[in-house]
Image (cartoon, rainbow, N blue to C red; front, side, top):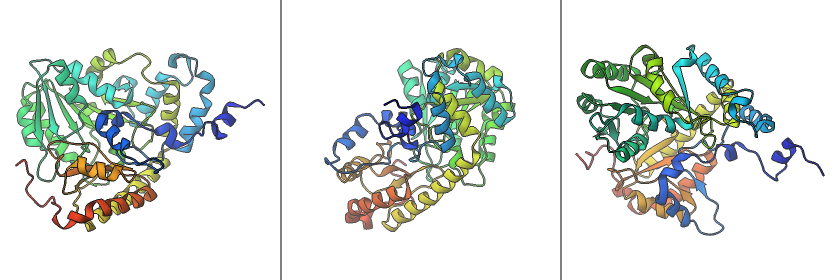
Length: 399
């Protein structure tokens, strides 16, 4: 019996779903042995809830899935021989921001761009300025290259501490500003970011400022606005975005950077050829053309996030002011202890994030059903010491 490509992918032989296409991005890879160790603790036959990697649990929207199906005849072609091609995706992003294609560089996820930014803009003498804790991609590549890394710990509200980052910027090659910040989920408003950029530009105009907005679509703080306009009007500033989060395409590996052509040029030279696949191009273009899907996803995440934070707060576990699709919570014990205990009941939560690995855990936001099931486990795991759990009202232990 002959089976069409659409029938094959939807018949149950290979069930095409948003969760399949969106699963599971590089965040899981970074977890390394921690994540693998936690999964190994899940008893046989126990259904796993994976809320460890900041993924969209629903995956891409219907339009993106349909676009992926439509590209299977081109699976044997390089992206430049397919329609739409890489240039078409670049044009679609440019149209969204009303900018020119030369203001954009595509990446295999935003991680390729972050790594290439370190390669392009830092040297052993002109190092990286970053936060602690924050997304480790830039830090890891700078250290492997032997380039100096200056880390500024987050403040008492678990937000990026901008003052010491400004002080450390003079003579630096690159500043990495993750906003919202991963893993703390906190955000700085647009005015604070604009002032930060202005002050760094005054003291160290040759320093490049990379503002990573991977979680942009989940922010609900009215003080926040994207730094993309700043990047377009200011030399040595760029913004990175990804389709891995709200768009649900972590497994597709699509990201991009926005900035002035002179800032984009070094990244364009370093990017891997054909770094975005035929399927990724089609899915990303369909996602950009479906803003209603992102609005629905933002509302869903906001509702489930509020539910989860409230339930944890009832256990005495304070969370940061999350503006992302994950929360950073004081669980009153080591992240490993919490992670291992949860894994034994089928719930996989995030890895260690020094210097808070002895008190805080990162918990991604799944579906409402997943979080209800996870919270039943959290109540069992956390109840013995819920009355003694620390809170953000305390002075951080590293002060």
